[in-house]
Structures are given as structure tokens and as C-alpha cells.
Amino acid sequence: MDKVNLAEKLSLFSDHWNPRIVGELNGQHIKLAKFKGPFVWHHHEHEDELFLVVQGTLKIEFRDKTLELQEGEFLIVPKGVEHRPVAEEEVSVLLFEPASTLNTGNEQNRLTRPSLESI
Image (cartoon, rainbow, N blue to C red):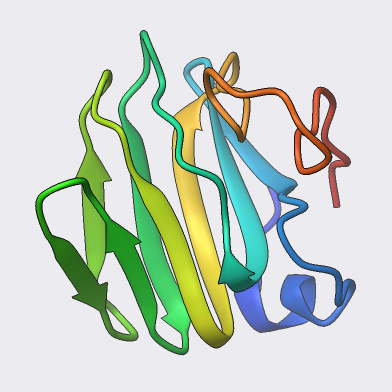
């Protein structure tokens, strides 16, 4: 058992849209990522997805609305709901989702990360 310091882990990388695994819990991954710019529209067929903003501001676009998350706020996107994260400025995010969750969900493109690094 080791404690995890989010700021320390976030200092280990600078690229965007490439989540790192920082913990595992009951078949779930706890991931950290940095986002900047728009992601791709996608959904996750079988998994809910939690976005917790550690630093910055994150917008989650849905087809009918946009929600803005500030530091310390989180949103759970239910499985099957199409969404697109957008970060106008760099944002640091903690993700909590099943280990089987592919970052681009039903889409496959240059941002797809089929395997993730643990840090």
C-alpha cells in the first residue's frame, strides 16, 4: 500500500489525451490525463465514465447541451451516452472507469490508446 500524490504523478508527463493508470480497484482503473483541445465524439457501450477535474476547466459536450466542470467537480457519463470532452486550456483530469474501457469508446483513431502505461 502506497499513497498516491496526484500533483507528483501529473508532473511525470506532459502529453495530452494519453491517460496513465495510477491505481486499480475492483476491476476499475484510476487514471490521470491531461487534455487540451477537442477530443472525438464517442460513447462507451458498456461502461460508465467518471471525469474529476484536478486542475483547470473541462467542458463535456453532449448533442443537446454542454456542461462545464471546474476544479474539484466531477461528472459521471452513463454508458451509451455520446459525449466529447473539450479543454480550451490544458486541464488535468482523474478518470475512474472499468479496466476494459477504451479511451475513444466506439471510435478508433489516432487518439485511441489500446494499452495504457502505469505510473
